[in-house]
Length: 153
Image 1: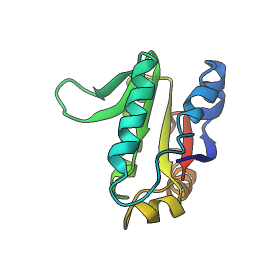
Image 2 (image 1 turned 90 degrees about the horizontal axis):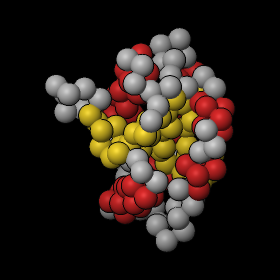
Image 3 (image 1 turned 30 degrees about the horizontal axis):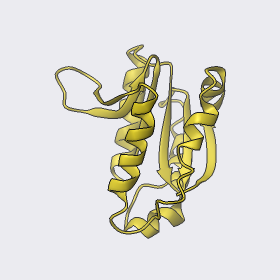
Image 4 (image 1 turned 180 degrees about the vertical axis):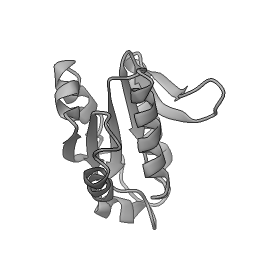
């Protein structure tokens, strides 16, 4: 697995740079031992969990005490989400991040997805970076949270 692209939505890149976490969060996706293919998602998630846990992030954080919805990780005023599953889950992930932002629980987020090519190696109809970039450009007045989009392959 390697970092392929990044994209800032609503100044998301600047928010991560301001906290001196941009290099760290993008370096998480430099993991040559992980090869994208069917069944790789457990290895990707385990790697991400290890990296975030070692830096003191809370994992699988509920966005609301009454709901079972979670984001991958949170620390201070930042949230992180990774999506390696079905495309239908990615817009829901954006909605969770926006909810946290509107609730003033976070100030910015990062959202990691495979590239379109990487997603095709994992399976069919897998969420991918290019599609989410297009959706964010359409829904830029709805999804206001600053997001650093990370593409890996």
